[in-house]
Length: 138
Image 1 (cartoon, rainbow, N blue to C red):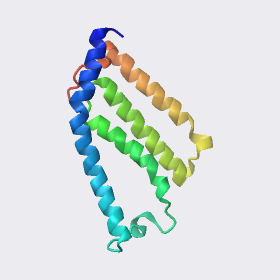
Image 2: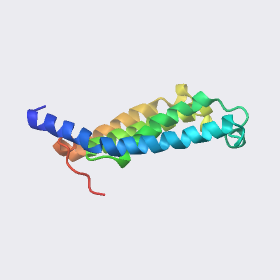
Image 3: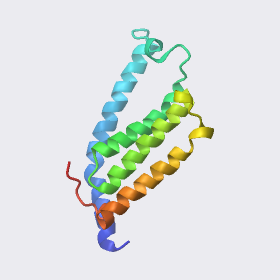
């Protein structure tokens, strides 16, 4: 990595930090409010999550949310690829914990290989622009 590329990486991280903080702040306020209303008996989350719901099963969704936030605040192809991989991994973990469509860690681990390969393909397809902070046009 040369000095120019390193400077662009640092600039990109600084440029999207306020957007990420706003999105994370909004997400935490929404989830915090829902859980607080549930704890104060104004709202019953078990009606929507089921009586057997375990709160820690939802932790992988935070990873997916982080990927979505990275995707929405992306300034480069590299950030888009990272966001998509985080979304896939978070949803895969959640699906395995909830046994969606019979998915378990044992039978669905190749999803991780597909996600890593897709990230490499996206970064390879766009070449050096994915590392230098090239702007993404929607």
